[in-house]
Figure 1 (cartoon, one colour):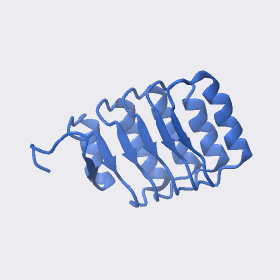
Figure 2 (figure 1 turned 180 degrees about the vertical axis):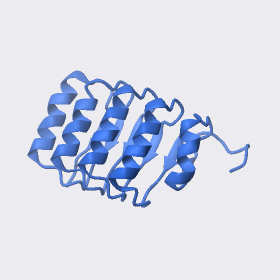
Figure 3 (figure 1 turned 180 degrees about the horizontal axis):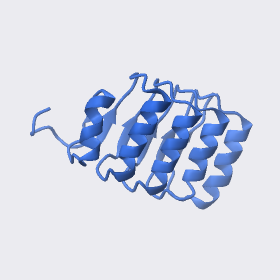
Length: 148
């Protein structure tokens, strides 16, 4: 990527290439597309650890990555302290009710996330109820997709 690349452009990288840039708070990396990288729960944990300290990333696309409940719990912990991420796309993973419950709890503390896409994640009534409860105290999330 050149130094002249504009801010706010989606950057498609592998997890291995993205991690050092996230950890160093690369101010050009604001929109990261890790779609279909098969990072799974282990990759999600590593990425979530980097997000805990990151202050530049605003948009993260993680659809089609095989992330389950364990990876979702790691992201939930990261979201509790992250103050820059506004858009998180986790559609087409395998998060389920357990993982979505952890994410819902994180929204009780997170004040920056405005858009969360969790469609196609095997989320049932229990997950929807967890979000209904969490959103009672969250005025920042403006778009939540729990479809299918």
